[in-house]
Image (tube, rainbow, N blue to C red):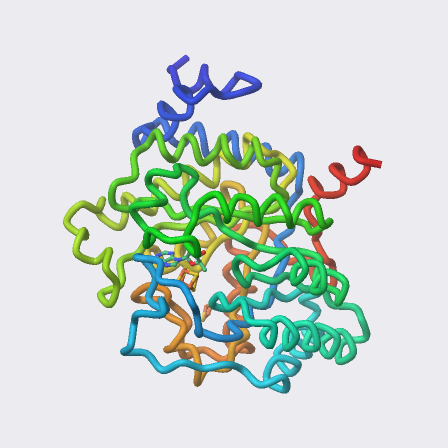
Length: 363
Ligand code: 5AD
Ligand code: SF4
Ligand code: FES
């Protein structure tokens, strides 16, 4: 038995184990993928759930050093969808039996923005017979805003920690209170307290990031007892401060391989959570999402943003499906998912099994 195979027989992994696993070479990593595929089959089954992605607005108050829509980038046009555009995307999701949508936006914290979203949530539920599950991904907000949105019918929230190492976090963000690591952590805890299904995630292959950091990220997810995860490779963007460090990056394919290992290892560690196959994975490898599905992912987010806005929501370069209308992507995706040997959980909310378990234990 190789070292990798023997670590994989353990119930739990230490930080050192995870570092060894993350460094596994091409032959050894097959053992990780096989184990992850088996865990996936046993604990979450063969289904992939769709979450229609609506990129609501690229206006953002923040200035994360890695992100193409950061406030400081003056070379993009800022947009915000109308209520009608959002409800139409929601209806498309509903009619195509997606069962669930994610509304994502740059971060804004004005009262006006909070109220707009609250009203929009009611409108979406009205337009879709209260059948659609809504996930929000709108950054850090005051507790009262999270509470109002929950009461207006948003029951899942995605807030990536981005990197779990506070020192690395500091290197990737401006040094001020709006970009404070501990505030972000507190926001995640708040969301959980309020009853949301909570998703978080990290970027993989960032400048200054080590394998030990990634091992800590996996341990962080476990410690936070998260319900959902979305992770993907970091992809450089030329209009961002971090671009100057591109010479420090691993080749893209290595960043992809590392991301795939992170997905597989997380599936082995947290057997019944939902894990997304992210667009950033597809950006590097055209079959990236299918590969992620084969080693652990069970959620996919087809883009429902009206095509005319998409070129302005480029968090990173080379984002795929920029010109495909929702219906075109859907046909393409279906074929891809079948190729990966999975099936689509149409009309099912596909809630994280982990969340259901967490709830029943708490009662
Ligand atoms: N490469 C990959 N992912 C990125 N994100 C932002 N910028 C990049 C980038 N350059 C991710 C962040 C954020 C999510 C919406 O997009 O993790 O949380
Ligand atoms: Fe804004 Fe999110 Fe980009 Fe940071 S990562 S600049 S919060 S959109
Ligand atoms: Fe968008 Fe294939 S998934 S075109």
